[in-house]
Image (cartoon, one colour):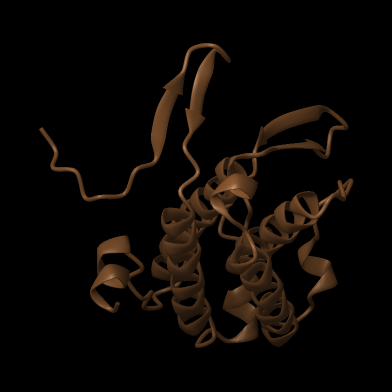
Length: 185
């Protein structure tokens, strides 16, 4: 049996027919803080690349470090937009950010916006269902807190891809494990 670390994520809601996350503000804020820290470390590692390897097509699902990092930032933006009531029809493309500096500037501003949004939430607002449309125009509904945790998880997944791409380029990624972050607190 795994010991309870005191972070309570899930309870089962049979009435709704799916696992409904219990939106614990402390946990969600912790995970957002982790994402900020891990994203900063990924950007720090990528900053050491020259422009050619940064945009080099390595045959990955998102092709390059540039395209993958753009996807991470774009997904964070699209989720924040949805949380605020908008439903953008498309993600950003790497062409919109011709340099690493341009993407980093947008990421920095976006993280400040997300920070403000997350800090303003409560257990009640995180537990409240949010209705939005995805980029296919489908209407979906999930608790806000579940969507924040989804964005955190999505970012983690693609930072792992950035790590692999950096290694393929012979560059040195920085570790972004959650336990390392917890050790910094």
